[in-house]
Length: 270
Image (cartoon, rainbow, N blue to C red; front, side, top):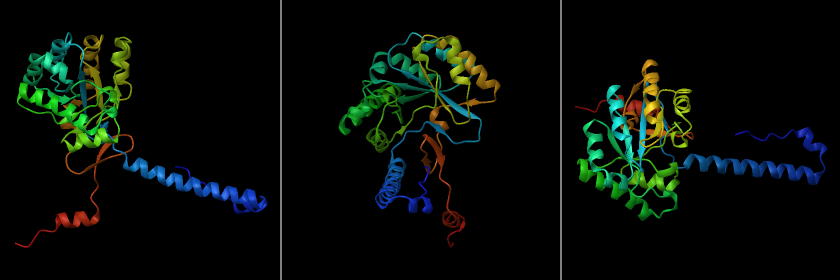
């Protein structure tokens, strides 16, 4: 944020009223700037990507509206020995329990994408918890394992959505590489979207029912493989231990202070 600097000579050349107005404006700007900085610092953010030097990334699929491509997607992932994360809406999982079991049988993880695909930021706290619980309970009844990752429908969230999901034991996850597959702009566009600017720690978004996914996915996986990337599920990509999330949504490990380092290296008396 740029700081307002006042030139003393310029202030002297102003009329008293104008000079007072400028000084007051500078004061208000600095105060509002501090408030804005504080607001940004305390905003609840999901994880969009991860700070890592290791050449790894995650691809993820949101499943809500159809199943037609799902088995073929799984076959492609098997071909490239890739494990990934499928974020399921409750009504999709309820309608296709066989596919939910197949996802797990093939080594993929299940994330929570709500029960009814609502605009979560418009819900009450109780409704948010209910959306999470219904889908997690359903997935657990099918697979034996509850969900621990959550992606808000439409990519929409507010502080309450992120905070409550974490209170319920979830990590709230977005993405920073968008295939834009839902726009149906063609295979070449999808490939370009997913390969034009890829970095370690990225999370890529697909949808299981998109029109060109079966043509684009092999090309994208081929590119990642040739570039030396290892593709892992989102839960394995997330950093372990004490972390923080910057204003872009990138997850970082907390840097220990000298005091913390001294405490961790000093052994207790035997």
